[in-house]
Length: 94
Image 1 (cartoon, rainbow, N blue to C red):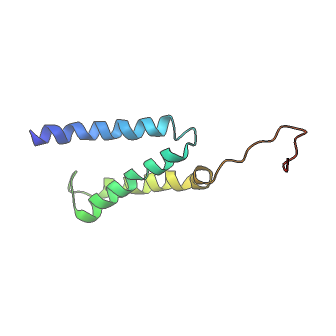
Image 2 (image 1 turned 180 degrees about the vertical axis):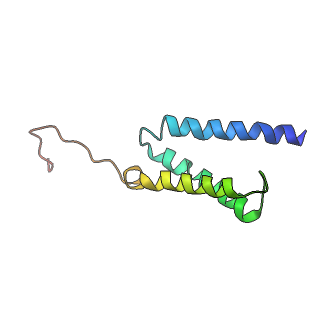
Image 3 (image 1 turned 60 degrees about the vertical axis):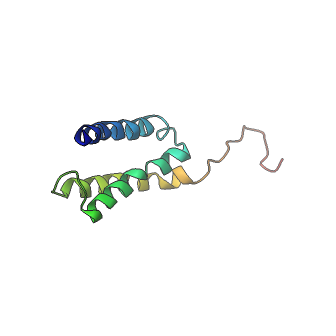
């Protein structure tokens, strides 16, 4: 029975991350950027701890690298607050 539960967690985790990446992350919502840090942390813990899935660790290294590249590539725009765009004719100091 534990195998069935573990098998259900894989697609559920993928759907969780996929939905966050497709909707709020693409909108540059700050919380989504932070939530997606789950993936590099998850795969690093599995790599360092020798945890499953699988005995080859190549896929874990690839997932860590891809998730870090994706998160760090947009880090500046994801973390820094958005600047409000001023309408023409409005002074910034008002």
